[in-house]
Amino acid sequence: MDRLELIKRNVQEIVTEEELKAILETKEHPKAYVGYEPSGKIHMGHVLTVNKLLDLQNAGFEITVLLADVHAYLNQKGTLEEVRETADYNKRCFIALGLDAEKTNFVYGSDYQLSSEYMLNVLKLTQLTSLNRARRSMDEVGRQMEDPKVSQMVYPIMQAVDIALLGVDIAVGGIDQRKIHMLAREGLPSLGYKAPLCIHTPILLGLDGNKMSSSNENYISVDDSEQDIKKKMKKAFCPAGEAENNPVLELFKYHICPRYEEVVFERPEKFGGNLSCRGYDELETVFVSGELHPMDLKNGATKYMNQILETVRSVI
Image 1 (cartoon, one colour):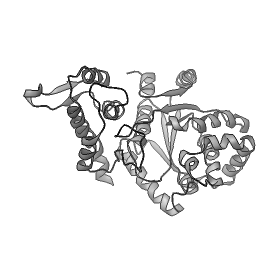
Image 2 (cartoon, rainbow, N blue to C red; image 1 turned 30 degrees about the vertical axis):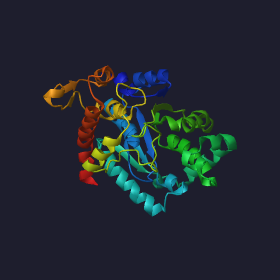
Image 3 (spheres, rainbow, N blue to C red; image 1 turned 60 degrees about the vertical axis):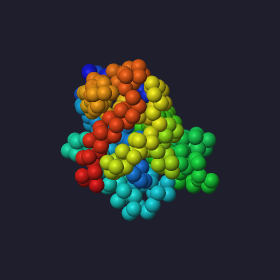
Image 4 (tube, one colour; image 1 turned 45 degrees about the vertical axis):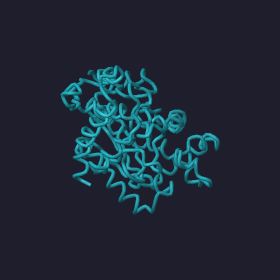
């Protein structure tokens, strides 16, 4: 897989691909970042962007991970001390998932977001951003609150300024971050900074086939035990022969197959014996054809997800 294909793997959108090609032609080690609000458990939805950082790191990018403790505080996720503790936990998880601790630049928001330079840029950008635009860019949790606070309106403005002051070429995030990233692309040049290129990953389905939600507990967390994962996978939605909207297949597409060149499904001889697939496309074809039963797919997902998360459990 060449450098461009690696970057584009499992990506929903690149804004823009032409800009990406230009960066790859002119910079040997471009800079990319993701910001994470340390507000709770790390689940496989978060890990999707970690996987993309791993791809970028392998493609020669310099990676910055923003542990956005001030953002979490503004979003009412705890005191600064509490969210800093969660940020430390998040950092350990990301390293255990494969990010190179020596090569990855981990930055706490509180290390620079309270400086006069940062705050002046935030205020300047508020002058250029309409109230409606800020509201549309507001974090989803904030929008759903009955009484959102002004701090949650400032949140997306701060994310745009983060991109500028961290000096990155590329902002990575889930597709739900698109409006904030577009605000940055449009607003930062007016402050004298370059517009970032943006890479957006898909939003994973919850294990029940619905939107992933902490309240529904329909996700896999990196600190789930082997038994937790086995129990969750047993109940997971997995329609036979269907690839669309199949959360178990999504685990293979986004988390398992990128880490394993070959996946093996262990089955008794009376059910056809072990079945191996090289790459996600082959797996999807086999499953849609009916050659692989949903329960065998679930059992395989259980095995590989536990292998992936075993390292994480050991450090948390």
